[in-house]
Image (tube, rainbow, N blue to C red):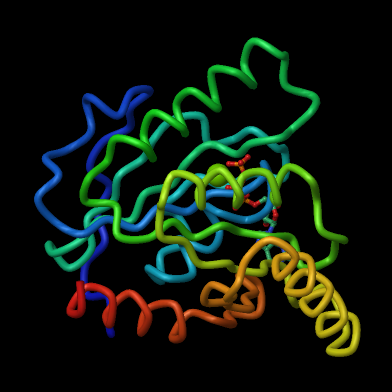
Amino acid sequence: MNIKTAEFVISNPDYKNCPKNNIPEYAFIGRSNVGKSSLINLLTNNKHLAKTSTQPGKTQLINHFIINNQWYIVDLPGYGYAKVSKEKLSSFSKIITGYIKNRENLYCVFVLIDARLEPQQSDLDFIEWLGSNHIALAIVFTKADKLSDNELNRNVNVFKKTLLQSWETLPELFITSATGKKGKDEILDFIEKTNTNK
Ligand code: GTP
Ligand code: MG
């Protein structure tokens, strides 16, 4: 699929004020700084669409972008960043959980995983939580450019094995690098397929 147009629609602290839920929607979620906003900019070929930062905690609201006037990409705040105050952490999670549980047009949640790290408990907990709420998900490894192919394969395999301890089948997995422009076509093809098959 080609993205011809990608436009910012609205930012919200509450799912209740999100745009009308009559078209497919795909959300990007993961720990703060994992590269959610950067990946959205890679997919849409627009470096300035979603705001990125070297400092964790940049995205703090639910941000809707409309793609080709047909479906939404949603940029969400990160979870599990210890340096944000406890109060803020819980409000982040309320924003995220309220949005995910109540958004009926959410076709798939892309859970972003930093490819450099061992499986992180907060990621595994979040994936479990999605599963227990019957939310469709796919896994996206980010920052693949920071590893050798060997290290990347090893980390991806460790992650898969860890998931298989509690899941019978693995979700769709993507390997990406916003810097190296890797993984874009695979994700867009998956979205196109999901848009037409659902
Ligand atoms: P929050 O909104 O704070 O939760 O962060 P985020 O997940 O949206 O991350 P963001 O896209 O703002 O990126 C965080 C930092 O990681 C920035 O400095 C990016 O340039 C960097 N980054 C993101 N993706 C990649 C990647 O694929 N490769 C490399 N090397 N750096 C990346
Ligand atoms: Mg962000």
